[in-house]
Amino acid sequence: MSRLIVVSNRVNPPADAGVGTAGGLAMALAAALREYSGVWFGWSGETVETFSGQISMQKVGGVTVALVDLEEQDREEYYDGYANKTLWPLFHSRTDLAAFERSFGEGYERVNRRFAETLAPLIGPNDLVWIHDYHLIPLAAELRRLGVKNRIGFFLHIPWPGRHQMTTLPQHRELVETMLAYDVVGFQTNDALEAFGDYIERELELAIDDGVITANGRKTRIGAFPIGIEAQDFADLATQDVAREAFERVRYSQAGRKMILGVDRLDYSKGLEERFLAYEQLLVDHPDWAEHVFLLQIATPSRDAVQAYQEIRARLDGVSGRINGAYATVDWVPIRYVNRGHRRDELAGIYRAAQVGLVTPLRDGMNLVAKEYVAAQDPEDPGVLVLSKYAGAAEQMQDALIINPFSREETSEALGRALAMPLKERIARWRRLMDGVLADDVSAWRDRFVAALRSDPRPAPVLLPPPSEKMANDG
Ligand code: GDG
Image 1 (cartoon, protein in one colour):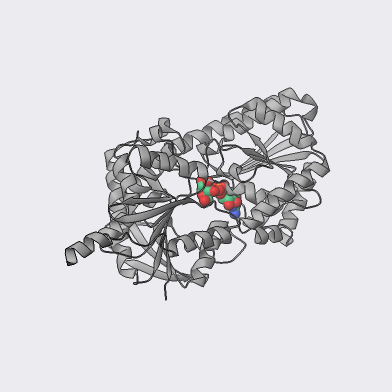
Image 2: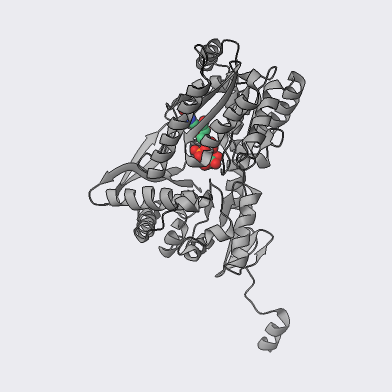
């Protein structure tokens, strides 16, 4: 029987469904792994003095996980370095923040090789291997080098950059060529797929025929597989006890004011500063809204070891403090800025309490918060989603108020419109959004990807000579 082997940098199956900080993705993958009796392989998050390749096998929430420790130098060069200081900014159109250091590239190659050498012995003859995200782009090429012949797929959770941006990466060509070792390469959006296709055709000068690239006798199918959330479960969660308590608490504290909500990992790609400034613009353009609205921004700190993250955090402290200092009154604070994580079910209740969901990334692979906001709404009195056109989610969620997050005026106008939107229009927009979120949920995403990975896109090329030649030779 074929098992599914999922590989990602970090491994986090939920120990308990619905609570804690486990995201929808972790839950969806965990469900797939239970179904296919698979294994989830990745870094333990721990470091040891010398890499041993020893695997720690554990069972977490019914899922078998295989964890490997890395060295401190691996963490610095591969994780903090190439993944988070080079690829993440580059793929989010922040070439100005991208560090191109040779040691990072070497660390990235070394860890991918170490992953491959540790993982290869675990792979059975019929297993499907599904590798996730930018930390592990060259992993299939390393596995092929070790003789692994299984079908291997790759899914990129973040955007694919434009060709000119991509070519700023030293050895971009070598990196992209490793992607041709996969059988399937999946992106979040058509936009990312097109950008990748442009690179393949113009930099590698390879043809793409009906979504298939042929190189070195191997076929790689490429496609857009927009990720979803566990929509029905999340909608149910939003009406359960913990969510209801969180909802009541927030509504009580609102004191009749409307709430605009942002929920993000604290990351420079999420457009948080632009969001604060657009909200300030709303207070300038519509002074009548002052004291009748507030912005709740939940931003959980992440990647603290990277300087750009320390800087954005300091900037946001500054901007939110300045706006609050300038506009607050004795009984009204315009921005409630919270740097603390919340339980998933609490979060569902907070989403439901918000009249506006404000999602303003400057660049984002998908953005699950937009989908969670929609799923958590009360069907009889739903809030309005204001969504950046640079979130992958905008391709599917055209019934949101779509904005350009770089324009304060445009975002401020959309906020004004959202706050004043009549119930009938709110319901009509929400219904269409919700139908999409339910239909394209995380299980649909997973099943589509696994189906693509299972099926051979086309028969292998016929290498026999054509019949007439063959006959002539036979004769
Ligand atoms: C990457 C791509 C793509 C946030 N605060 C809390 C909390 N969260 C959860 C949200 C949501 C998740 O974190 C964030 O997901 P996003 O999709 O918004 O963003 P990234 O973390 O950047 O994810 C992104 C995604 O991968 C999947 O492919 O959509 O484009 O960048 O689920 O709810 N969860 C809890 N407490 C919090 O305080 N429990």
